[in-house]
Picture 1 (cartoon, rainbow, N blue to C red):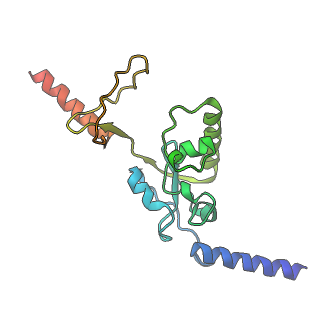
Picture 2 (cartoon, helix red, strand yellow):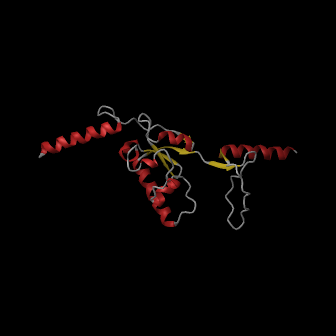
Picture 3 (cartoon, helix red, strand yellow):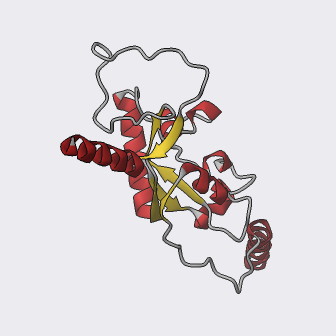
Length: 187
């Protein structure tokens, strides 16, 4: 019986190494700090390149989940979360493509509690390697305020437009606001 278990274990290890592309003599590389990255940059770490770390984010915090490639890597049950901020999907326990976003607005208290549980799990199990760059949608030629959004009672209705607003980094908006404020002081 002990021989059968040992043989089974060896077979399992070989299957894992074949699946992950790693060898027994090749341990996982240490996590690389990414700093602040855009959602587009994060998508490059979805597991499609076995030489890159496998990353995913929760509430804008990026974690290296390479050690769980069998779950989050290609073919794994949670592969669709890799390379994305999956906050909404995790909170709703959803595998729907429209929920694969970091937008958690409109979630209820039970969903927010579920998301908090996921965040605690990731914080305890995986290394945080960066953050997702926050972007603010703006119309071309206009800057958007980074102030808190207005409530639905007082928010003006935006005119319908055919053009999709482009996204810019919060820092870019702040720089433009500072330049505009400086220009107002001079005049």
